Amino acid sequence: MNKTENDKKYQSKIDKLIKIMRDSGYLNDTKVELAIRKNPRHKFVPKSFQDKAYEDMPISLMKNQTISQPSVVSRMTEWLNIMEGQKILEVGCGSGWQTAILSYLVADGEVLSIEMHSELVKFAKENLNRLEIHNVDVILGDGSLGIPEESPFDRIIITAACKKVPFPLFQQLSIDGLLIAPVGEYPQSLILYKKTSQGIMEIKNQPGYVFVPLFGKFGYQEN
Ligand code: SAM
Image (cartoon, rainbow, N blue to C red; front, side, top):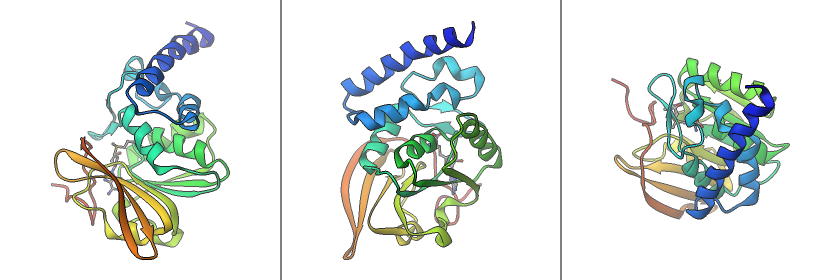
């Protein structure tokens, strides 16, 4: 199959997935739709799973990690209400797919993404470089600590489950900034927080999500 035939094959699958996410209410924002279309998910999954890239489910990556379910990525992105020029911290880069979507939405802003596994840092960087995405920095480290020297961040997204949000991440959020995280043991609730001059407020809370755990100093301890 040549490149054009291959792209066409995926195009109809992308269209179907977009329709499913729109019909189920997980995708409402045209800009987020465009960000998803511009960053085809099959370019962020291991080759052996490319045919499954447009099924609305998580897919295994190396180190027992997963690329998140498209509808969940869409919901988290929409709740964050990202604007051009913003500075975003992502905790848990995985494949770099969510990172690429954020990078499209901030345009001339920037995304810093921390990942704890060096294999995934390498994988995400390769995926992002192939799509010539340059406003992103993927960093190896413990995301539960954030990156204090780069703060404040306009938006923070935690893509792994935490018992409670690591307090350094709230500290590194700007006033009026938004933070989203799956919080709780099993299953988690997706919670959107806003930092105001009065403190942290919960803006949205929806139960029923399942994520891999957030490890690190302010996350779960690895065995
Ligand atoms: N959004 C990603 C994507 O599009 O592929 C999927 C993220 S996956 C559900 C969660 C990621 O968080 C995993 O890659 C895992 O290695 C990472 N992770 C878990 N604890 C971490 C920590 N303390 N610091 C950095 N990354 C962490």
